[in-house]
Image (cartoon, rainbow, N blue to C red):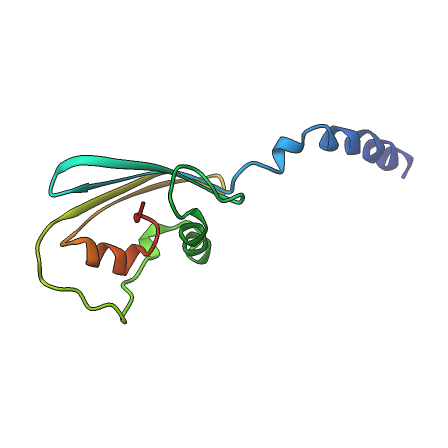
Length: 124
């Protein structure tokens, strides 16, 4: 019991001395979007705490938290109706979510279809 108590007393200051550990985001992603194969728009997204260069990190992170960072689990919002316009939007995401690697690539027929599936994640 004394050994446990001694170890606990020594460990507490070690954790307190490293507050950066608590600030490590649960998600750190680099997101890109290209329209019709021309140019790329790139943003970073950090979750918990929410931030990065993404213009709406909170709604994007809220969606990612719902799906536990697995972009493959994204489904189309049934309340969104899109036109048949064809202007392909290719999106990619890579980084980490809770220590797991994230890799996602998908091409949507247009911006509406992209937003119906990915919500705020690629709207930056």
